[in-house]
Image (cartoon, rainbow, N blue to C red; front, side, top):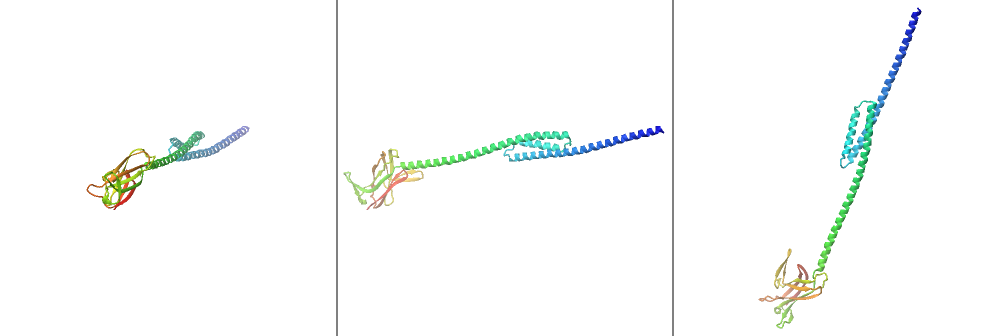
Length: 295
């Protein structure tokens, strides 16, 4: 009996130890399971944080690429690397080692992004400065062009003024009929039938701007029937034709010069009664005009 009791006692102790061991194992297993679930939850949360950071980085690259006038291949390549890492992270295992690797890659990409965006900002500032400088240069060129055009206009106008000012001018133009006696003496004549020459006198005015030397002016005498007397030759000036009675040639020395010229009547006719018009031309420009009447 005593031996049986000892055996029962030992069995009870053994069962008690087994129960304690089982309970301890169950508790430990439960603890491990609980810790594993908590760790997995934390890993998922950390993974989402990394994914959010990668999304923010991608948005910054998208904005930088959109604002860049010229597509920066470095920015585009970095944006593609971020997208690749995001795609890989979505299907990755929820493990400490895996998440650590992704965090390490994220930090490397973060450092790369800081450098690329800083360089992009620097280039934007330089481009804006160059654009401003270019605009300023274009404005200066436009102002210089306007100034140059203005000078050309002024020089052209000045040249025209000088040319006009240097042109020969005549004053005191008169025309009259004269009768020339055999002695050579000329008698002013108002009667057409007794007039044998038309006398045209004028003064070439002093002009220091005119180059001295041989000059010529065209004299035109028109009778009452609108005929050009004298040689009635023609001279062409671009689109203008001038019929003249004679050419007055003289040497000009930049001082007043009195000149008289004569137009003879045709050998087979006489001067008409009426109003005569006398004009002096410097090339195509009429510089003086006068009238007289023969009765």
